[in-house]
Amino acid sequence: MAPITETATENSVRITVKRKTFPAIGGRDENTVLRDVSFEVGPREFVVLTGPSGCGKSTLLNIVAGLDQDYEGHIDLGPGTPRMIFIFQTPRLLPWRTIRENLMLSLPDGDRRQDNVDAILDRVGLTEAKNAYPERTSLGMQRRAALARGFIQEPDILLMDEPFVSLDDPTAQDLRELLVDLWNSRPTTVLFVTHDRHEAVMLGTRILRLAPGSASIVADETVRLTPSDRTSRDKVQAELKRIFEGPDVGVS
Image (tube, rainbow, N blue to C red; front, side, top):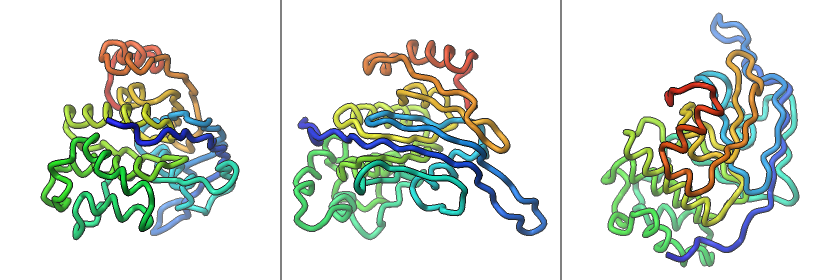
C-alpha cells in the first residue's frame, strides 16, 4: 500500500505548567493536580505520559490542546500554526454519516488528501465497512476509523488520550500495531496518554512518568526498541522491566 504522505513534520512542543489547580466546589478542597511540569517533545518523537489514575495525564493533554487555559505556565507549539489533531478515548464519529463520510468531512472540500481516503481505509482494514454507519460497526472498527481520520489530516502534532482503553486485549494489541505502522509511515510529533505500561513501552520512543498527587515528572526514559522489536512481546517485556523496574505488565 502507498504511504500516507512523504512529508515529515518538524514541529516540537515545549510544555511548562507551573501550576494547575481545580477550585474548591461542593465542599471539596482546592485540588492542585499539576505542579512544576516542564518538558519538550521533539520533532517526530512519540512521547508517552504514564502514571496512576488521577495523576493529571489527561489534564496535561487538555492544556496542550488548548482545551484548558486556566493554568500557570506556557505551551510553545513551534513556528507557524501547526496542524494539531486530538484523538480521544471515544472515537467521536458522527453517527449520521458513514465511516467514509466521517473521514471526508474532516478535510476541506477539494483538498488533495480526499483522494487518499479510500487508501487509508484499506490500510486500516475498513474497506468493506467504509459505507457503514458507526453504530453498525464494533468499537474496535470505530477506533480504526478514528486513527484513519487522524492520520489522513497529516497532523504536525498528534495528541492521543488513552484511545484503546476498555478494549479486549487482542483488539487493543491489533490497534497498537496499526498505530505503530501508521506512525512509521509518517512520523509525526506525538504526545500519548496511557496508564498501561505494556502499551507505553510498545508505542513510545520516550516515556515520562508522572507522580500521584500534585503531579510532577519523576522519570524520563528513552525506549530502546527498534521498530521490529516492538512486534516481539518478549523484547517489549524486557524493556518494560528495565524502565519500570518490575516484572508485571499491569497498570501503573
